[in-house]
Length: 79
Image (tube, rainbow, N blue to C red; front, side, top):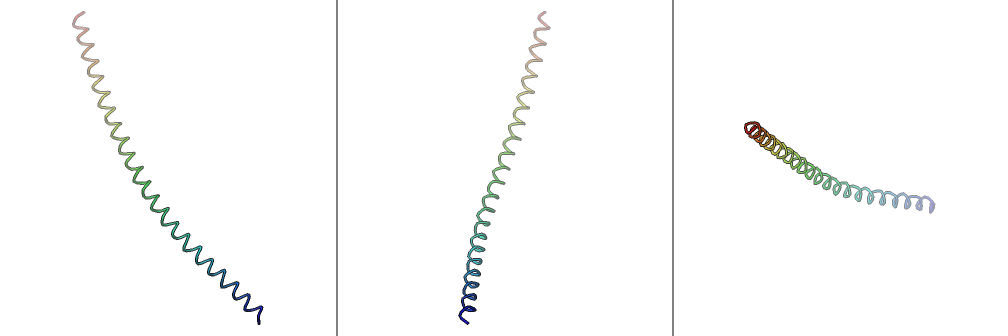
């Protein structure tokens, strides 16, 4: 009988450990999901900045091309 009680206590301890591990993992999962959500927001913000910078670069390129064209016309009309 004592042996059976010992086995039951071992089983009980293992179940308690399992429940504690589950709770710990569940909490860790929630923390990681929060971090992931934050990183996804950061990625979206960075993508928006990159798009904005690309648009700005394109506008600057167009302005420079326009200025170069005007300079070429000015030089051509002088010569």
